[in-house]
Length: 401
Image 1 (cartoon, rainbow, N blue to C red):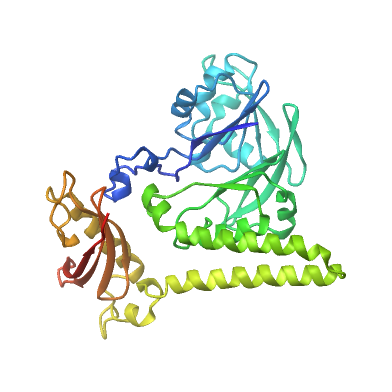
Image 2: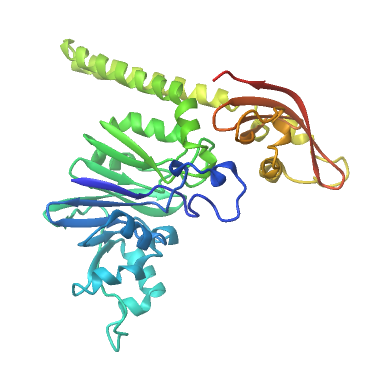
């Protein structure tokens, strides 16, 4: 079975329209992500999972020649809005089979009523053949079986799908323990990971790494990635030690489990293996929490600084963080580079700030680069009476190539 990633971005895609975030301005093709979807094909069968607003472009780029069906995870527009563009496939057949939860089929029938119409149908409209996917009931796709995986997306039921030893999960925040049994023994897992910071409806990096550790797939790919995750190359560079640590834990755990089979008591073997896994994951979670310790979002004293004694807050800290960050990113538009990197232009490209962390009510740490050189800068920031933001450089450090 072949898997083609049609898109790996979030609901707005990357770059985001009108955004001045450095990732949205990146010229690296790896930082450009269409809405999330995959094309899977084997023998003479061809299916896609989800059909978002970039579907037409995705089909043209991938050169997908035919379509035996669409598997839908849920009804959000970034996963369904491209349904009208199935027309070239529909016109070759009596209709394209679509597989989805009954709730999702009903939603599509309301939004695309002209497609589902059976009386006096407009001849240029595509046709679909709906198939309701019921929880816990596998169904046929070509000559294979698809197993629906029930998950939760901040209160909305969503489906993932397993076909053979491949599984695809997106827009997942939580999943019941009994569903995990359906995901054991995977060769390839594709799962959403929005960003490093917590999110109310998607896995973040810490959560998805724990999820991967529970399932132990042979290989994992992350999808539904936000521009807030950072530059592709920067993630590769800065996350290497974190990923190495996590996978070292997994390798150690698997090695221990293998040799522990020689123990006389199977119960002791299970207990010790489980304890190692629990302790390792707990330690990892603690380390990740420590990494966020110096942050305005987790500092009550710094948050209270913005409380007036008589007046209301000028701005809630939840709004202040993106507000200050965006103001700092806006300065990347300066032709000479962002003036708060503390560095003059060295080569052909200017220095711009690409990652910002607001430590408290006064300090910011940011990293910057010009595509060749990387550095970090410690800044002061001030919220002025006219609600503008002022910055001062404390110290800047430029690393050697």
